View 1 (tube, rainbow, N blue to C red):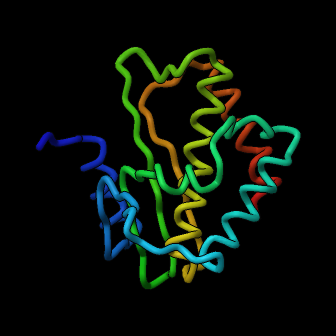
View 2: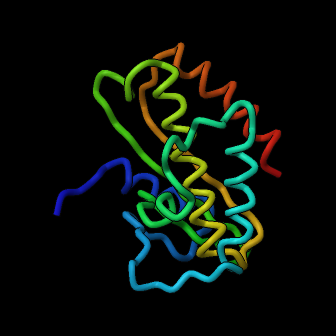
Length: 160
């Protein structure tokens, strides 16, 4: 088993700085879990709201809500039971900087990962009050960062 340094660092951060009593790396859903309509209702509404938005209408491309939930993996998941807060953090390290294609493609892919993490947390941890989804990377091209920042401002307008 290889040790992911960034995951270990975020694990410690969630445990000691955010007060998460439960922290797990590489958290995945199970194909054996039964997911009810009630459990997905909140996340599905948000998915539809984002999909219908003029800014994000292509962010999920051909991925249905069900696919996003089934394929989800959260690099580090933390649960702060005292504050009813869930943290989902995705981590990527590319030595030459994060690059999933053009700056726009990279920005949309990162935003999609953030949204997917929110959907998963809302579906499987719906009883919690606060959800925090982060994408962490040490190196991003300046132009990509500007696009991501703009998309995050627009995302906050859609998400309460």
